Length: 341
Ligand SMILES: Nc1ncnc2c1ncn2[C@@H]1O[C@H](COP(=O)(O)OP(=O)(O)OP(=O)(O)O)[C@@H](O)[C@H]1O
Ligand SMILES: [Mg+2]
Image (cartoon, rainbow, N blue to C red; front, side, top):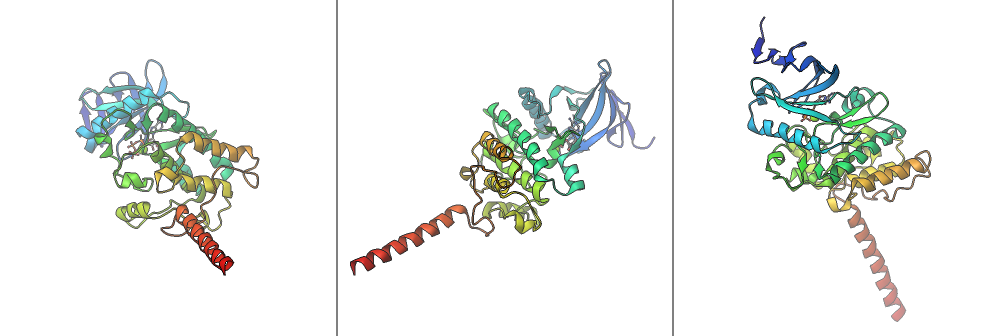
């Protein structure tokens, strides 16, 4: 049959493992689940245990790329450190008969957040906030284990029918105390839509980088739009480094997201990492306050406020404060002079 070949212990059809193919005699390939820049993922069945798993291979063009292999290895190592209900679990990391590595993961039933957004445009705040809290809580846990994800985006978030979250794809995650070069090179491939300003300038990413990426994701979920996107890869990176994110109504005039929730999102996507939430825990706490204050509308009281200058290109909150202080100082001077006269 055209396009069919046998690689060691597995039949490959048109570069994809065929349905029914055996992996080391242990797993039987069922069907493709998804594909990203760094992996092809298949549903498979553990023959003895009769349990469904997901198996992640490198795409064919990267199957002998040393850097890609190291990344998959790193993903296995990272996931092995993490045990959280909202983070996908890993079961095994092996090589098939021809030496190609694969990662065996918990099979997650559901759709990616990207697929949901493609169908529904954006999500109502009342539903979205439950999803955001699960992501923030899982990432607080990951940060405590010394893991920065660095690639939070809707394609990497699975949502079950009950809206339970599983975070996927720790392929470019950074581990504390590891040399970062390997993964830093992987950061700027694919789409720049969820990149933070510090990733654009290749500065060291830390927990606050994940806060920024989650902020962009929340912006997209609530408005249907990604902020600060240019016509090209480089224009997007440039906008990320030089502009503040706009108010929701600028990109989605019909948006009825409560201002309290909008303020939380805009706090996450501040250009300067020192001005963002400094931890996922403090972001989670504010999201929780939004929920607790009953109905997400008038009563919501997160600790952050909407930045007044957020809609104005290149202006940030501190310059507004500076301008106000200058005006007050000028008025006081005039008053002092008048009193002397
Ligand atoms: N454990 C899983 N259960 C079900 N589906 C999964 C699982 N892991 C991955 N997928 C599907 O496969 C797709 C690609 O997976 P993943 O994000 O890990 O690959 P990737 O190539 O590293 O992605 P990227 O392009 O972001 O680097 C996901 O978007 C999802 O649709
Ligand atoms: Mg992915």
